[in-house]
Image (cartoon, rainbow, N blue to C red; front, side, top):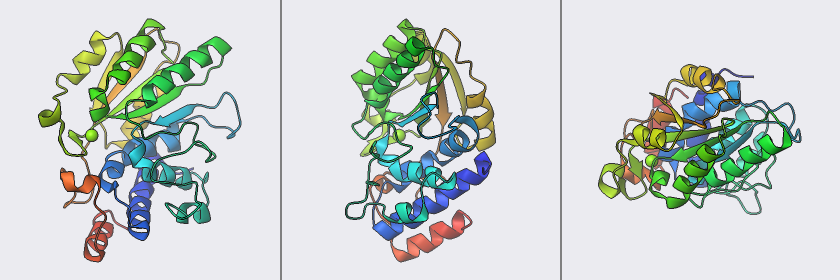
Length: 265
Ligand SMILES: [Mg+2]
């Protein structure tokens, strides 16, 4: 099993390579969460077997970063080279958004604001079944614009779901603008706290630190956990960082070569 940092590097390289091969965008959103996914899949998620009912669950609520999820699954040996190369190809189960027909993906996502409601249900089910499994949900900051997210926030606090962890990818951007202009989220941590959650703010690009933090959250706690991860959209590729264009745009050949060089591939 790779370390959190090594898996995050793998996620960056695979995201660039497969995005280029398939001519599909959502690169900046994927690079934003590479370290979070590296930490989760290398060092946090307990998955003894893909069909183990007590395995931890992970939901990529920001489903448009699917390529980063596929890269993480590939990096821990849960997707083959051949499966990965099918990304966005005809009849491939690996589409631009995750589908639950793929082994290792429990929930289809991409309709924003829906991942945390599903996660809250999964966490409640675990409690009712007496299972120790944990549920981790990665949401975008812009999903905090969605009423459905806040319904789940209230529900999880009401049911005391300490086995639920929401990780907020706080990159300050969304598809068509900066969150401060579209719908300002500040003060985000205080808002989650006011709804009854245990909240930690952290550097979303410190993969080892994220692994320690996420792995140490108490699933027996009476409050659900929110980790506000401060991230940079397009992290690691200088011309993408903080640029709205790279929500959708694919790379030219020259841009691809520069991106690979910058992430050390
Ligand atoms: Mg965002």
